[in-house]
Length: 79
Image (cartoon, rainbow, N blue to C red):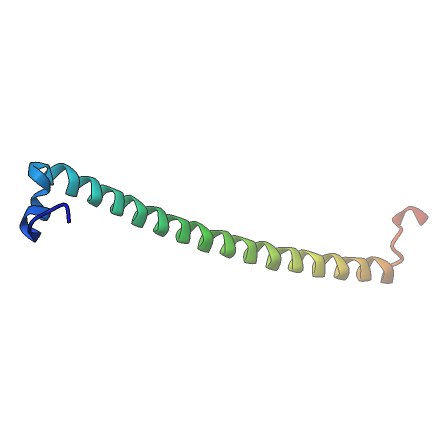
């Protein structure tokens, strides 16, 4: 083993502040990256659901408009 005791491992041969700060920053960045990716995925899915609902609503409105246009003659150039 590289270290004689657990305390020597924690001290990292006198480089503990640098080593443990590097580990802490790396762990923090990985955690932040994971949380950011989850948030972005959630926002993307929410926006896609809104888009699908909007397109379904617009599609239904276009069908309704076509029915009204067909029932009233549709072409106003006949007059």
